[in-house]
View 1 (cartoon, rainbow, N blue to C red):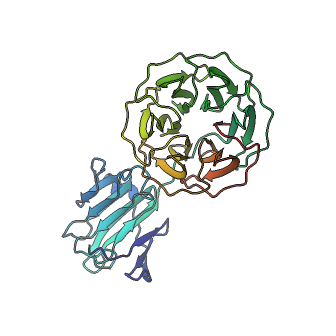
View 2 (cartoon, helix red, strand yellow):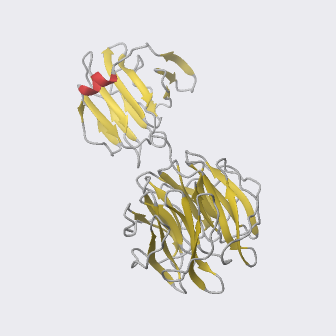
View 3 (cartoon, rainbow, N blue to C red):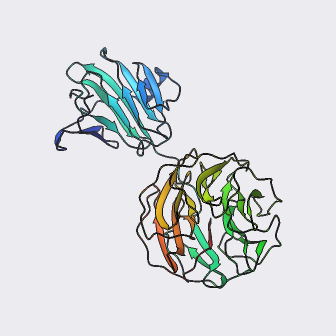
Length: 436
């Protein structure tokens, strides 16, 4: 390929590929209506190991699952081909929309155009079959259709609670399935700040730990209607500035924090909302970090303060076991927040790098943190986040130099929206979790 700017854009389900020239104008739009029985083709295809590299030299008769979780992939087609040669490509991780594939037709035509055109496919979940027709048409897509994703799962509603307004508070604000934050609900439980919260039981939540006039380990359950229960006597070491997330589909984990010094201990939460005793810490002790779910049943702790800002992360498997440190990706910071989106991915956003920021970092469905995304919304720290709407997220409240109650919605694609005028009492060092 010559590298000339241009692309082929898939139109889902149409079999049409629009061809752009070097000036970006549409030259032709072709789609010969060639049809294929995918089942028959796949049955006669030699499927290869999953491809994770940035390049692939394809062989006729083979099928390839292309995993672009960490990088784009350039696929070089055979330098010579016979009529009827077929290659099938599939989006292994449903991530081509983030990291595309690029096809190098290697001197042969691709849908009648020579290989001075750049051929790109950037649709999540795409299955692409190409067959060599003749020297004039070259390689021709015989199907290019996005496979329907499994239904997005997750909790429909969220709750923000507790925090600090100049004094500790225990008020809460519910978030409905459209991401609308409701007005204050009178607090239940001991007013405190710097605790954390997570889901448990598939449809409920728990708020635990924090700071009153000293660190505490009490907890408060949130039922499936968003009602907060009275205090439960604490289990585990009293601490604040910790993080929490779900794991295993119906359980939770609290981890790290500050007891007067930074710690890395964790406490598991079973599917009845019971907090377990301390588990010896894994990973670097730190506070003021964040955590979220990913991959449907796993979690990740990330960023925080070890004495200075860090971008370290620690994965949590679906049994609640915390893994050792992963070198940081993205700008080191603390006092940020995180939530899941699209049921199997996560997002860290906002925080303090020495000054407030609105940067965000997406987490893939295999727990890989991506590089910084330029901030959207007002830069702030000490905020909270939760899932809502079975696949979307919301960041709310925080500190900009004063207490705020603004919020920012997160789409099912992980895109943060602009500020929404705040509802409820402005505060910071609060908690957030989802419930159903």
